[in-house]
Each structure stands twice: as C-alpha cells, then as structure tokens.
Length: 335
Image 1 (cartoon, rainbow, N blue to C red):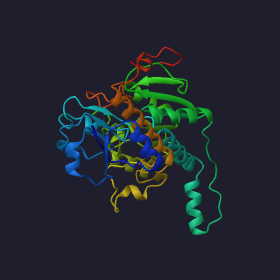
Image 2 (cartoon, rainbow, N blue to C red; image 1 turned 120 degrees about the horizontal axis):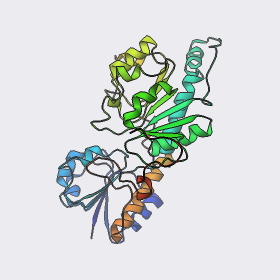
Image 3 (cartoon, helix red, strand yellow; image 1 turned 180 degrees about the vertical axis):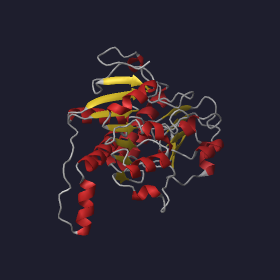
Image 4 (cartoon, rainbow, N blue to C red; image 1 turned 180 degrees about the horizontal axis):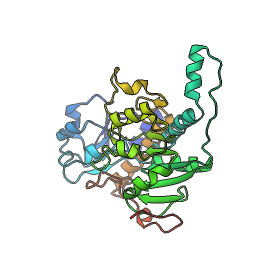
C-alpha cells in the first residue's frame, strides 16, 4: 500500500479526488510549513513542497510532485533518492502572475501610483501625459507558462511580443519574435517593458546588472516575477534613483524579505509587492496545482507517463516533443 504524504491544501471534494487517484493508497496530510519526520520516512509519494533538507528522511520516496514551478533546489544532486520521479507545477501560475504583471505595468504607465499618492495627500492635480500598452514592445525573458500567458495578453492589447528562451524552439502564435539568451543585449534597447520570468540557475543569477540596465530605454520598465537575485539590487536602485530607467515592477527582491531600511522602498516609479503574485492568492492557482497533482498521481499509480517531469541536469521541465523543434515560423532565433 503506497504511503502518500500531502503537504499542500486538499479539502472536501478535492481531497476525495486526490485519494480516488490512487485506490488503496494510505494518505497522510501535514500542512506546510509543518513537517512530520516520522511520516516522511514512510513516504512513497510526496505531494507538495517539503523543505529539501527534510527529504533526506524520505529514503523510500519514488515520486515527488511539487506545488511550485521552480524545482532547482529539489533537482540538486543528493536531495532525492536515486530514481525518484520529480514533477513541478508549471502551467498553474500563468493566469495569476500574468495579470499581476499587467496590473503593475498599467499602474506605472497610467501613473496610478502617483494618483494614489495624491489621494493620500488630498491633492487634486493632473500628473500629465500617460503611455499605452498598444504599440509598445514587451521583451519577455523566460517565455514559458507565465511569460507565454503574459505575451498572449499583451499581444491582445496591441503590443509587439518578443520572447527570449533558453533553447531554440518553434515560435508560438503569442510571440512575434523569439530568440535565445545570447541575443538579450541586442534586444534590450528595443523594449518598452522587460519582463523577467526565470528560475534560479547559475546563468540567471545577476542577469540584469548595471550594464544591461544601461541598455534599456530611458523610459523602459523592468518587471521581475521570477527570482530576486536575477537582478543586482544595488544596480537597480542606482538606475531608479538616477532616472536611467522609467520604473520597475518587482514581486521578488534580493534580499527577501526586503529589510525595512533598504533604499529600494523609497525609489520612485516602483511597484513593489512581497512575492504574492503566485502562491494561492488567486484560488484558480491552487485548483490548477491540485489538478496537476491528481492527474500525475493517477498516472503514477498506473505506471503511465507523468506531466511536468523535471530534467535533473537543468532543473527545467522536460519539454514535449512538439515543443522541442527549432523555430520555423516568422521571427528569428538568435544563435
């Protein structure tokens, strides 16, 4: 009888559906961040993000379903017993985070942050001209689920969408152009909005530094919803304070949580949120993650193929064959 350790929320009908996915399974529920060490030692399956260090206890583990899209800490050597299947929750977060990004960008280009400040001060004053998403260029660095969902929304609003991906693949309809990472420096001067939706890897750490911020348009907006250390915080503070870029939308920071006395708090033209664009703040996100877990637990119990399988060598989701072919439609791939 497989022992299933569940650390993410499942209640009512959703719990019944999870248990029906593995008939005869022994289900144990322990909400994060609590960890039951004894139960974890019995686990054949873990559903949810148990702290990676705790997985040393789970020597029987055969399948781990994460509730996060990021999986690097779990794909690191020695974290999981050899042969354990690892799947992430890619595909669950695009709706929530893409809307959060658009809300932040619209706040800045429509100057809603200035009007909110004026409202607090009881000041009735025009803040002058505003900008539009229509006719702008969105450079989306990391055009997976989140970036792709954003691109579709931005394109529907009349933006040109340019994607940057780790590998060359067929160009989807929501991107007007697609490139690989080595084209980034040449693309930055074109962008009105630069969106970073990237996992934590050695290649993405400090990707946006003073030099790359300096290549952005003077009124360009930087958005980061991936990992805080993708941006050199001190360089971003300097660029915002000097007016070298038009603004920033940050849902992640480095360090995080941001200390109370950090200069980033007081930067002008900044929309700052405490890593809340994802998680379960939008109920649909939790529902989507639960659905992935239910489908994968069903497949695992039947010995069938899993979705969102993580490649341990890269920390990224393995792509279906249909997504692995090189770009062959309108738009170029930087090589």
